[in-house]
Amino acid sequence: MAQVLELTGVTKKFGSKDIVRDVNLSVSSSEIFGFLGPNGAGKTTTIRMIVGLIKPSSGQIKVCGYSIRNDFKKAMANVGCIIESPDMYKYFTGMENLQHFAAMDKRITRERIDEVVEMVGLSHRINDKVSTYSLGMRQRLGIAQAIMGRPKLLILDEPTNGLDPAGIAEFRHLIRKLAYEEGMAVFISSHILSELQLVCDTVAIVSKGRVVKSVKVNEIAQDMIVEWYLDKPAKALEILKERWNIDGEQTRKNSVRAGIGAVRVEDINQMFFNEGLIISYCESHGNSLEDLFLKLTEGDEIV
Ligand SMILES: Nc1ncnc2c1ncn2[C@@H]1O[C@H](COP(=O)(O)OP(=O)(O)OP(=O)(O)O)[C@@H](O)[C@H]1O
Image (cartoon, rainbow, N blue to C red):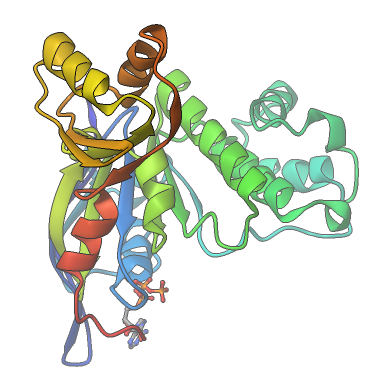
């Protein structure tokens, strides 16, 4: 997999204060990378450096192998981004907005505009005024604009801020499509861990300007502990042991708990169902990204 974004020893000082400290990270094509940290951790400052709005005090940033210091134009030709809320002309239609931005880049054809509109699922509303769009639709229009020039790297700063659950689900679906079908590297910053956990492959946890931990999300899920509330706990324990060699324990009259390692909870539920058990509900505990995040950023000032 090609490295699309690489930060090496990136530091940013404002006055005598280190706002971003010695950040090292890399993102490959088709990877969804989450940059997770509490408010004030330095996420936006890092993104502003990646897109060239401010210069690092030290360290190196490369996009598709081009250093943003030495090859700024070539590096930026590979970047699409939305920082804060997408800037659109509300009294223009979605299409007029896209045409306006496309006029600045000769590579973007009318066919490409239609293609991105289709990709973000806005074909049916693209000729309506942006002022009539929901926040989720504006967000998708912003993404359409950001990807028109076929960037290899898409950067989104706090993209789900203010979206309702349906908007968040649509957003997640779109991001997956861009990464896994179009091969884009997607870099998303957020302070909302549950959202990153659901969409990202890798999450870097930032605290006070430093990346304190980088984790593969599927490895965290592997440590999951699940508790089932069901009618036949003894039978459930037997199935877990026989089928997956999992040692569970009965926690209450009607509940069983077990660390399920790399086994998918869906497969276990299906097996319980096939064996005639009735599950009233199940829940997961511990070792989620949330626990890790809270542990690593404990005591961080929320500014
Ligand atoms: N131009 C600047 N001059 C001085 N301090 C700054 C400047 N820009 C940002 N900071 C400070 O840097 C710290 C990190 O800000 P940043 O916006 O990068 O954080 P963040 O992680 O994106 O948080 P948020 O989610 O609140 O935007 C904050 O304490 C902020 O006040």
